[in-house]
Length: 97
Image (tube, helix red, strand yellow):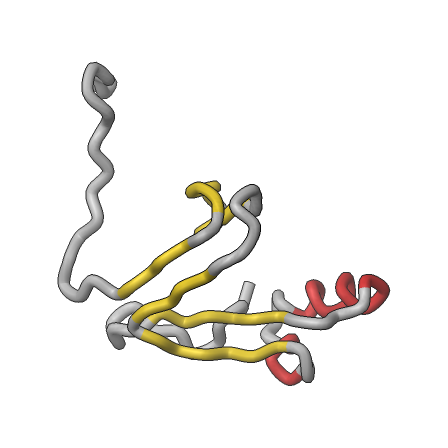
């Protein structure tokens, strides 16, 4: 999927794709275009880059990042340059060897 064309992992910026005001009957066609990047020219699609992103909305709205459910809104994201994210199990959880 070519959601954020030109996104670079090394530029220190978050790439954001916003889609607004798309009628239901046009949404499926727009989603098909994501696979080849054709959605970028649609008037309801806006690509942006930022160091910090804040998203507010209903607290029962789920948030997915890279296909993983990470929680609910509100959401704060920011670039942490030159850091490696590491997942650490909760206390009492053992990892399989």
